[in-house]
Image 1 (cartoon, each protein chain N blue to C red):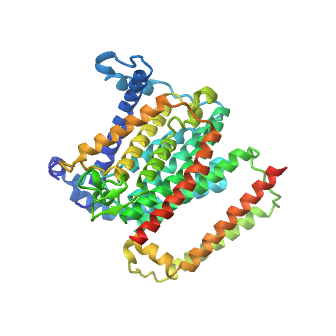
Image 2: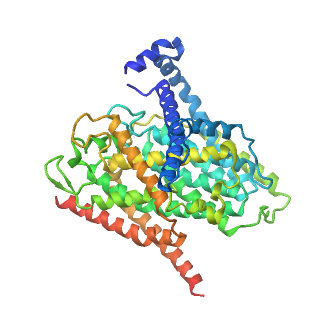
Image 3: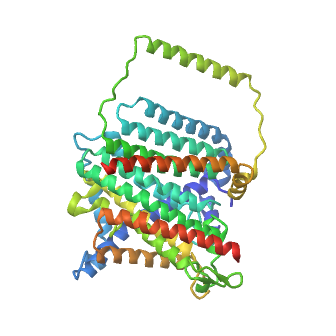
Length: 190
Length: 333
């Protein structure tokens, strides 16, 4: 505490804790935009890169951006789970599969007619206009904060109100595991 | 004190300095330890080689950064940074004592594991990006090892979290304060009356093995088995790219030792209940790091099958059983 006060007194006014706190409130919007930009850039890399491993890296950047948005929205638990599961497990599994399967270096383009470019552009434009229209028309209401991002409350909710969903998700995962085991067994017996 | 940008900047600077200093001097400790165990001096010029790390740093920084011809440049450059940066982020939430913590989070344990999971991505990108056969093979090995040891590690952490009822690292430390008999590693606790926790030594053992494997340390250093794979995933890296991988590795070792200290060895608590403080924390983590070095230079490397079998066939069943038993005991008592 004392060290911090000493350091504070040695700095010019705008660099002290109070000064920076003032800037922080105004900077919050900028931080939000930076997070959106990171997410979008990651998404663009994931869709457009020629090399598949680069696409996975872009996907990881995109997931980190989304996690940052969750953190910004006061849900650190969801943000950490997003990183742990999507970057730490999903991305690594995809990259693993790509490296072991060693697909062709250059992405093979599927059969695309001459109309695919213009049609895609029109569809994207229409979607954008629709989104902008919706965003402008919607009356945004600030929702009250629910449960302060508490892990305990999330756990209680998962095992009471949403226990059905929770069980269904675990059944889906179980089926996925059994399916992968069956496929692996099939290959081994030959 | 509130978390302002100013405090955050100071915290990050201290975390970077701590990580870098530790990386530099743990390399020296590692080499001295290896020398001692192999009956040779190790780096010993000017006062136990105290100037060796700065010299090594200058050498690494002045070397030319070579990018191999066929490499994927962007990924090749990103991978070392990705190995180092998450390790520094994890330091932010580690409580070194009751008051010394940059940002106490109520999900501290989860945050450290989330950022540790970037490590696998860094290794994969490094191995693949350098377009080296050895690199790719080492990356596949290291990552399969990392993901298979993450499972028993997380399951074991759940037992500690269940005992404490909190994921806050500070709360977990505080719940063990007041002397060696309250620490989580022992099968009984006197903290809130007499409490039986018979599975805790097993949890500690599993967690210790898993943190050796997660930091890619011998006997589990299959990712850089130099007799088979040249230097593993960082074969193609020279100069500071290699330096960053090294710093990341040692920063991860410090984080692993800190986690073991906080989860099982009482954090900053003194064994006899006297003068708790940051010095006890540092003493404990450096003793643990010493044991890591000791194990590295006295055990032979395992094979990749032995390694994966140990995780999937032994550690995961034991840790699941451990979890069930701990849950049952908590329900009964």
